[in-house]
Each structure stands twice: as C-alpha cells, then as structure tokens.
Length: 634
Image 1 (cartoon, one colour):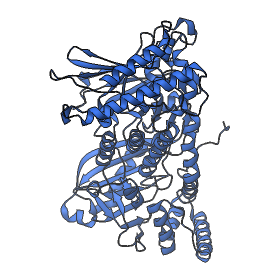
Image 2: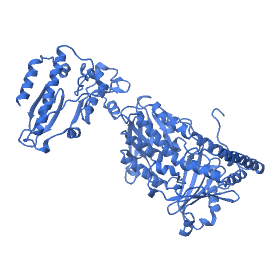
Image 3: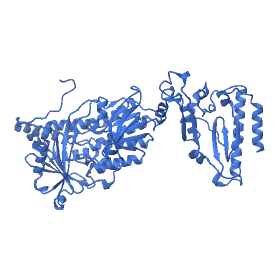
C-alpha cells in the first residue's frame, strides 16, 4: 500500500496540470484504485474494469497494460483528435517508433515505471495468503470475463458528409479500415474479446462493418451447405436460407468415390455401393460395365433428402444459422458498394407451417446463390438464361427378390423412346429403386418417356408400388455470368451439371466449397470485406480444373445422342475394357487419366468406325438434338 501511495504521489507531483478533454486523457497515465460499493474499480487511462467483491474483505485486482497491434501504431493519434468520442483510446506507439521528445518522453518513462510497479504489486497480491484462490483472476479469466465498452459518438457534424450515412466510428481511415478499428484492435490485443460499441447515430453502418464478412447462402442443397460450412468454419457470420428441409429432389443420387473421402461422408448415408452397371442399347443389347473396378471401388447411391440434411446439419454445427424460409428477393439500397438487403418469408422452424410465416429482412455483405436451376439470385444479378432439362423420377418399391437383383447394380437405358437427348435410369436406393428420365428438347412428352423407361425395365420392376413422384429442372450448361460484385452462383444455379452423364451432386458440393474457401481467404477469416476480385478466384480455379470435363462430355453427347444408330455404336464402344477403365477412373476420382498412346489410337479408329456406321444407318426422320445458339446468334 505504501508503494502504491508513493507511486501515486510521485506521478501527481511530476505531471503538470492538463486542460480538460481528450488531451488530458492521453497524457494521464497514473493508475488509481478506489472502492466502489462492494466492489473494486481499477482505472488505467480511460479504460475502466470493475471487479465485484463478494465479502467484506478487500479484493485486489490490477489491470495489466498491453501494447496495441503494430498495424495501428501510426493511427493511434486519431482516436484522441478533436471530440472523437471513442472512450477506449489507443495506447502509446510501440518501442522503436518515433515518439515525443523532452518532457513528454520523460513522462512516458514515468508512466511505464508506474505500470511496472503495479504489475509487481499484482504478482505480490496473487501470492498473498489473504486472497483465496477462487478470487484470483489470471490472464485467461480476464480474457473470458472482461468486457470492452466503446463509446461511439454522436452525429459527427464536423465530419459531415462522411457521416451522412454512417456513424462516426464507421468513418473510413483508408482501404477497408474504419475509425472503430483502433479501439477494437487495442481491446483484442489486450485480451478483451467481448466488446460493445455504443453509438447514437446510424448504428446500422457500424454494425455492418463490425460484422465484417457477414454472408448469406441462399439454398441448402450440397452447394449451399458446403459453402456455408467453409464460411462458418473460417469465423464468418453465415446464414443459410432453405425453404424445404426435407426436399426430395428428382436425382439419380449417384456420387463418385472421391466425394465420399473428400467430403468425409459417413457410410450410413450411402444406401448402396454400386460396382456393376448395365448399358442397354435401343435394341436392348446389354453391355456389362465394372469388370475393371477394384474390390474397394464403387459408386455411392444416396437419397438427396438424407445427404442434404447431413450436410446442412454439419454446416450448422460449424456455426451457420439456418433459416427455414423462402427467399423472395434482394436489393442494394445504398448503391453498388452498399450491403444487400434480403427479403425472406420465414416459416416455423419445426414444421415449416405457412400459417406461422413472417416477412423478415436480412442485411448482408456477400451472397452465394445456391438456389437451383430456377435461381432467383441469378435473375437479380442478370446472370443470363440457359437451356434446361426436365428430370422426372418415380420411386418404386419392389419385393425383396427383385431388390436383390439391384443389390449393387445400376441400369442405364438409351434410345429415343426413353429420351431423345438423354438416358433413362434404374438406380437402387435403400429399400426401393429410382426410375427416371429427362429431356431438353421435348419437355411436354416427359411422362411419355417415363412410361417407356418403366416398360423397358419390364419384369424387373413389375408389380412395384410407386411411393413418390418427383420432377425438377436440371441445367444443361454453365450460365454466361456467375459472379457479379459480391454475389456468386454455385451448383445448379451456376449451371454445373454435366452433359451426357447428367452428374451434378459432386460439382455442386465442390463449387460451394470453392466459393466458401475464396470468401474465407479473401476476408482473412472474417477480418475484412471481400470484393468481386476475391470471388473470381473461385471462378478461375473452377474453370481451370473442370472446364475440360464439361467440354469432353458435351462433345460425347452431340456425337452419340443424336440418333438411335449412334446410341447403338456408343453402347458397343462401352464394351471395351480400355474405355471402361478410362471412364470409371475419370468419374470416380474426377481427374484426367492419361491413356496409353497405342490404345488411344485404337480407340480413335474404333470411334470413327462407330460414327461412320451410325451415319450410314441413321434415320433422318424424327426429332433431332439442338444444343442452343452461340452468343450473338439470332
């Protein structure tokens, strides 16, 4: 106590009187301690920490002084210029930087001496027998319990027009930094991680900045869930909006082996492990595929409601806030550089009851559109139109004996009776089979094609009961625009479904993850605002990795799906073990597999022969396949 009193008296004698105002706050360095009610209040500069007292005995706690982050050293003077109203002032510049001279330097040295004595007294207090262990606050305790309160100031008339649409603490210092970043940085570097900023004018602008990377994911399928998981995992505040939490999308449900490992999918969500396939030509010629697979290689079959639910819950565990609601639209009320205000019809979280619907708004900085082929986000940013297919699927329950036939087998049927430009499928699920087809060029006849695929499957599904019917649009090619400002499209909304095979689940999940990783990296894990340049890194990486796959499958569809004769040649070509190995390796691992030059030459001549034979046998009457118009064509 004598040393504290001596230190306090010494400081009072050596420091001259100061004028009232922020300048006095900056120069005042003495630590004072006074009893307040039943607690103890420690004051260091202008930051106060109150420690409650639980008994009549005196409780002692000395606040340590922490140096600010070097990044903010050059800006520390800004917090005390004029009447800034920031109660949590910036500390002195770090050692080695230019500082005051003469008497002011001497005063700073005296302040350091006083602080050093305070720390010494704190250490002595910790070892004092008078204090019980449960009342000693170590550094970890302070990081959890000490709260920083920053007074944000009023209307900021002297900073007008900078404060026309923002609070004074949100006034920019340069680049992405704001005035509020100075006291916030000092709090963080002092171990104070719980902060409130109080302001009385335009608090929305301040809240947006302090939220930093505040993202909204529209859509809760594989694309949206994987994007949300990456953003939330990186510390970004993330919202995911999904209307149908039990959505059963008409989808074959096939996923490659690499997705199971890459996305850490548990075995319980995989209904079947398919390692055999049958390709069935228009004339019902069957080719067995799968002889080249290793015992550990397979294609996973899932139900979309199970897979999507698992991915959403995992994103929620990482910190994503899931909203059961319908996205209605969004706009930028403050111009192109302002935030997006999203309009949502929010439903009851438990049963999605429309009676409990309420209209809400959510203000966000970044939007990821993962809302499917009919994406509203894509329409808002003018992403452009694309051709789309109608996929139709029936879930059919068959008896156990018939189900045993499809234990690890999937069937693909080609022919203009089941689809003029796609294929029909019979894929095994948990306790039923999914039977479906799709088309781009003749959507009104989709039910006719569905009747044909049931007829082609014949006795294998005869007597089965249709337990569910599903239909949904499927994109046929990527949209012309997939990034606009701070809005990115992923999954079906971006058009990431391959031609020929119609695969989309893996590419949806992968694009969502890439977009989330780009946001996490661009925002420095939620520490700064991202821009279009950050999002375009995801787009560049995607195109560089997967664009060749899309082009190859596009060519295959144009060559082999144009007539029944071409389809016959395609099925014949699939009987080659070399073709099977190349196809399965590329599908299972999503990599371009280098081939043997001699086998490639043989395959080339075989393909040319198949094409010539198909052209010779081709019947010109009937529907033909078109693949859209090039940009600029009428």
